[in-house]
Image (cartoon, rainbow, N blue to C red; front, side, top):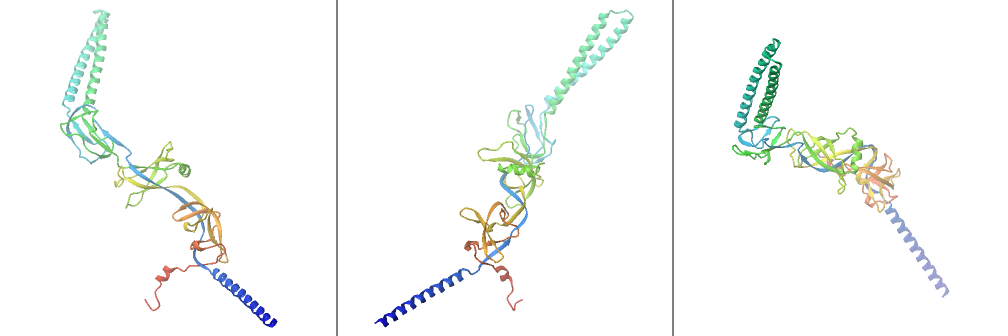
Length: 379
């Protein structure tokens, strides 16, 4: 009995030892399997200057818009332009009925000529009376009377000349010309209709070239823009849907910030000889607000957002990864400017979702290059 009991005890012990050995080997295999290198894509962090671009939605506005109205109430006699026509400054637009103003001008000129003749006669009379006074043929009072008449006629002549000039100016009001170069809108008068200074504008002229684009940027960008461009004239890019970008310059920054939106209004001026920009159109606007000097750049997808901080998996010399906490300064064109990382560091760009600190990695093969590589025996 005792011998059989010993055999049972020894057998049970062997079974326990075998189980322990089995599980130990199983754990070792799992550990070896877990330590297998993971396939990822990596890139090197580089140091360079990166421009930071801000984007906004803007709309096209005319620099100048003029409502054309007559300075006198009169009948429209002739229209010299068409709706939608481009006109130059000084170009004749409308002619009003000038017959009444022309007759007033002729009358004023005639009165001025009559006054000039009366003045000439009075000056001759004064001259003769002065000669007679020297010979004691007339008294001093006669000379004084003649002199006063000359002075009075001189004032009358000046008044007549001023009236003639006023009539000439009034006659000029009947020729209405463009004050700026631009495009005409709807013409609201017709030949024979009455044009009035207080009525609707006869036509509106809108300046098309050059032209402005108005937009708003966050107020925090104001300091960056004024520091980057102390002399003004910051380059601004604008783009219409489906059109190439065009470049203008910043010409206006508002003197107040909108407290409700936290933005500040700005305007950029663009050459518009091809008339691609039209007042009222919406465009996309971009502006380089500042440059980050000597920034450490990594692909933006390399930055991992953790529960608390942002970090990057950095590959060591032994091909094992470690977490490196970073702060993102800016992201531009798929590149993230970060602090807390040294230039030249090898970082994981793709495949970081399954990584843990201490994992070994291997660079993934370029499948696209493998697909492009011709098969053996083919041309």
